[in-house]
Image (tube, rainbow, N blue to C red; front, side, top):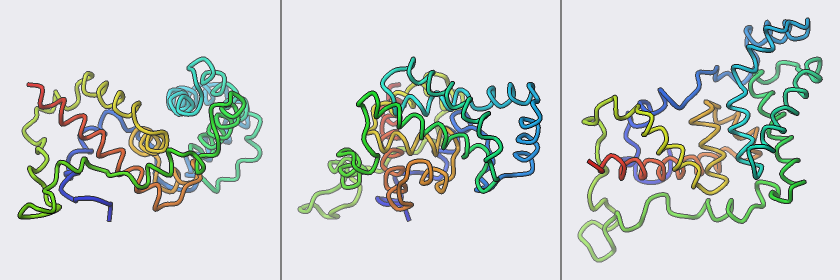
Length: 240
């Protein structure tokens, strides 16, 4: 069970948002038949297959690289290095993970190496923010009744249901922009996890593998990131 009051994340909240912000990828942890066909085409020098691969993942790779490195220009360089790494490493792809995960792992390894060179990064698990992120409150304490009130720890007022919000507004570009802005302000660990899980469509196993964190820590970071993003959207939807 995710940490915190279960009422905070309503069942339909993320589904509507993810129609626009989550890429449609296989959640399987191993290579699919489609992966195998694509890899075979790439090994045979099929140029259109490579163009299709770039169209499918380039934006996602750039978005992920920018979490680790200090500028978009450097992120672009990391993505180019990643594509070269993919082409040069095709013979080493064994299908023990999905092809997407394999590509993303190349990107994260190269991005972290480049970030260290830029002196902007240390190993994920040793970041001070990472430790503090695991112990902070997921929801503002003032939203709950205090110890001297009738129901200590219970909501003062429940979070607003989004069922009455028109779908057009839920999926509008301005809403998507608010979501991205909220994600950009998150601490590094939360930003990495929510980007992989809710934007790039990675499974929890894939996210743990790519970031080198435990399932429990991944779950805590994701829950807190989602709570903060939802709070930003609550304020936005109240601007009527």
